[in-house]
Amino acid sequence: MEFIDIQRKLVTALLRLPVMADYAGRSSLLQGLPPAPLNRSTAIDRLDLNNIVSGLQQLGRLTDQGGTRPLIVVVDNALEYVPPGSEVAQDLNEVKRLLAEYYGGDSQAPVETVQQDLEALVFGRQRDSRLAYAFAEGAVRTARSVARLTVPRFSNGFLQPGVGYGTGWLIAPGIMMTNHHVIENRDIRGGEAPATAEDLKAQAEAVEVWFDYYREIGGDPTKCRGAQLLASSRQLDYAVIRLAEAGKVADRKALPVIPQAPALVRGARMNLVQHPRGGALQYAIRNNFFVRLGDAPQLIRYQTDTEPGASGSPVCNDTWQVVGLHHASTPVPKEQVPQEVIDGQPVTVTILNEAIAIHSVLNDLPGDVKQVIADAQAHL
Image (cartoon, rainbow, N blue to C red; front, side, top):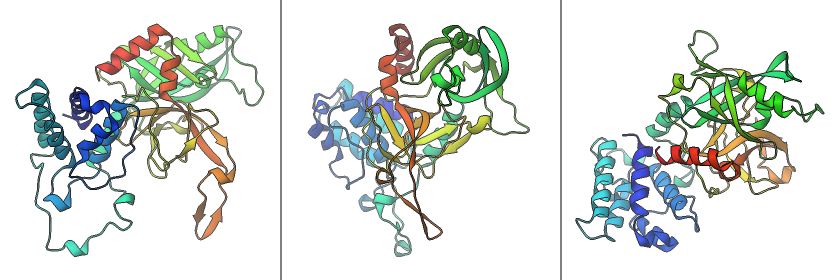
């Protein structure tokens, strides 16, 4: 079983404990654990628990407790609140079994001591940049649900020369999320007139979507042609389309989304999976830090690198949950951006990339589309 499935079972079980409705109660799950840099939410219990679980998963073993896994400690702490043999206790013990199985049967392991003094976290645990193998598994799994979009141009109902490129991803079976401006395929910033509703519909119906486009030469992408435009917003820059050939990708899971405002702290990781310039899929997972919210609360700004064609990419946390829909870069005062030094020389940075928080998109959707997506997300 993949870790994200175990996480979902654990959080679901924890939410059945009345004490988890209180921030202090959720904090009691951390008893016996060393301080850890967790992105906590004081107001939203599910988000807080997900952040606790995903954050602790990154710690590995506890070297000062015989190699115990932090999440095993969390489950044991939660079991203190429930009667033995109760339904919730059975669920928690099942999660504990799944965790031990996921860790290869070694939820507790001896710590190497012979050469202990020869190893070190150079910048301390607060700056520990290591990632579990599950991160790489999640990256591969996420890529299967991300695709390149090739969008033709229609004007007054007639096909025009040239195409536009973008990125999209599955938010429900056969249903993709991307940007409005990707489907619109107009240079609005350059002064071009917006597409009419009829041309927008025609361009969605003629879109070509390539999954598995991992290399420029020698690859074998899965190609889906045509889609129905289900919903869109120029203001929030999103478009939701239903693939006409959804059967070709029926085996692919939707990406899990965070349906509430994410609890982001400066430096939180913003991972993007994208098709820059219409090319093969690329990950942006190195210099990828949340900096600040934008001019409106639904805008998330970060340093993660993108290029044209990345529009519509999913912006993910380190457990590959979608927190935002990437749509643009934006100029900002240099005082709002961490400045860089490259080859010993200061470099002035006055630009950040920007996403629309995915919960804002979900809240804006028409009721029928919102329900389809909610039902799909509930079964991930």
